[in-house]
Amino acid sequence: MNLCVFYPHEWGKALDPGDERSIHIRNILALRKNDSIRIGLVNGGRGEARLLGEPSGDTMLELEFPPVETLVPDAPGGLHLIIGHPRPPVFQRLLRDLCAIGVEGLHWIKAEKSEKSYLASRAWEAPALMRQLRLGMEQGMRTSPPELFKHYSLPACLSAAEFGRTTDPLPGLLLHPAEPGENCQSMFDFLASRAGGSLAAGSGGRQGKNPPTRGDEQRKSRLLLAIGPEGGWTATERGLLSERGFTMVHLGNSILRTENACVAAASLAVQFLSGTAPAHPATAKDIPGSGEAEK
Image (cartoon, rainbow, N blue to C red):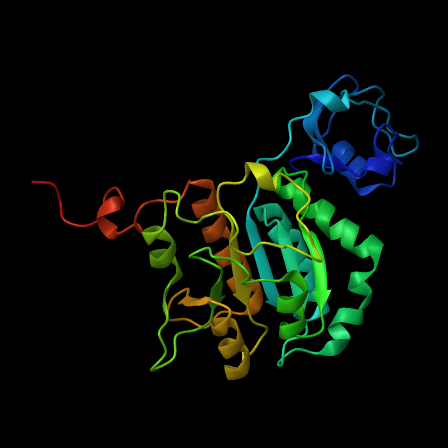
């Protein structure tokens, strides 16, 4: 737990001794009375709190919360994902991990190769969602969870969010393993060739039914990334995304599970959107002690 995160209805209240955060403070961090801890308010920002009492398994843990106006908000995001809905356990892990990475919006869809029942699982109940998002924010030291949407088909998703209605040169990326005869390029190379400002605002915009709600006016870059379920996108789905202006990219020669592909692609995209990605992939000569000996 890198950040002790509170939802607005919990802010200013003591922690129950059986609460996961209280247990972690007591048993893992081993904090004592008057110690400080990094704290976050969901959609509010980060700050520092002080323990007012001695952590105990028998009593409520009182904290001195910082004034809300002193909290430091997250930097604006920009990455939105369309994901073919995976099995519920994978869905829960992805909620946690993609939240930690800093994804801004998640559109979960019933793809042609995924089960409709997944969208009605108990993993979608509010307490389960809130827990996984909180765990993600605690790990990634973030306070802005991604907005969540569910759609029962890819066409419904694209229509509801009005994806593709933009003159932006980069409306979105379609992640799919390269197949013979298909025009598919490396995601890294594609993003690297457009680094430095050409990932323009508006790519993947949520206009109309789902208007943006956080910091869009401050955002320099946005990106929409479509990742299929186990088994990938069908030819029909790929054709639909291509018609909407999506560019097909891949992560290499290996075929990854949806879970691994989401985390790898999202991490790479967030680096480019934030301007922290390297200009080129690392090679052996970039690693100290490798390659030819110096002459």
